[in-house]
Image (cartoon, rainbow, N blue to C red):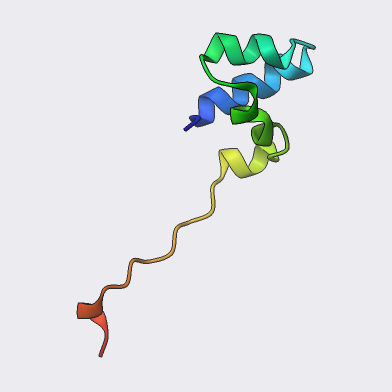
Length: 61
């Protein structure tokens, strides 16, 4: 799984015109691994949505 820092680096290198194949080699992943990250808005990376509370059977009435 890619970390936030990896995704930000992918976006920066992609904007500079670095080939996706070269970015993938630098990260040690397949280009398909990070291709969806290029479509992710930068604000959603910086401010992830809060997770839902974990409900267990013991907490139900």
